[in-house]
Length: 210
Image 1 (cartoon, rainbow, N blue to C red):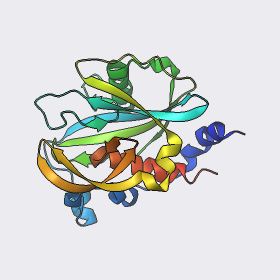
Image 2: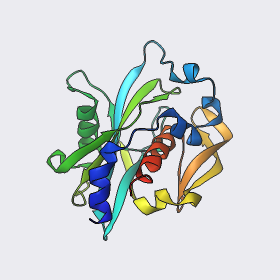
Image 3: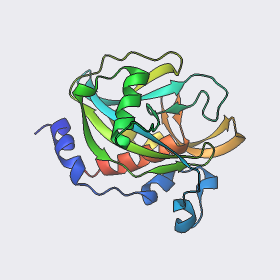
Image 4: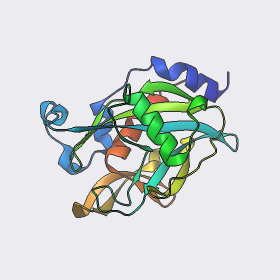
């Protein structure tokens, strides 16, 4: 059995490590007791995102997006495709799939849900995000929604699994300036915040597949 087939067949059996894995890449302000970190405030909004695995040039990749510049908390940031849950979405997977299709044109008929990862709360925008690990047997024909997506970033999975992908760096966002945070670095791409926390959990699980 090749690595891709092994990963696809085995990943569902591995327990999600949850907060323990996520905190390895959490910004400093995220730390506290387990009770405070897991406490979700009233009036929270819900969203779902997708980490989609697919083959490219004979190796597994996943995609991230750089959001366009707009008047909002996550302007210009790098994230997974995804977005707000709507009332007509039957569940969070439906949200993740719909938003991924809308933002980067992925054909939902070709995507398989592998596993739901641990939900992550994002304080600056008050979103409770449900991430999903998914798989497409072929590289999607990506079509970007230009109003929302400035750039598609295709990252080899092996780069995520490298130890030196986990670093620290200084970032500036719409709600903070010059703060040092843990981040994943893929070439010149810096991924931090909730997206890095989700990647940390996925990374830990994928490394357990043998």
